[in-house]
Image (cartoon, rainbow, N blue to C red; front, top):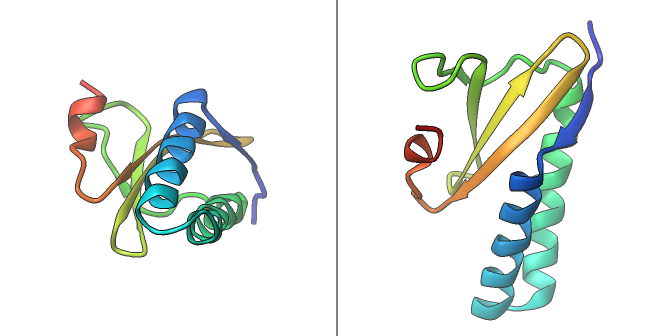
Length: 100
């Protein structure tokens, strides 16, 4: 089994920051931090068995998407050595439009 390095694109990091801010305002900073930590752990676990989710070459070559806890869509790409988390879309945001 191939182990790949997981990296977050700048846009994905900004998505995490925005999501943290939104949840911290709506619930609490502690709740937000726990959720962000679960997302980051899930993404880092993509280092093994990286080619999961659904391919969406129709939107962007090499694009894959996977759901997380029924509320988040993770868009990522897999190369021979890396998994790049491209974007994170929460609560039904139109992720397809972001890649057009």
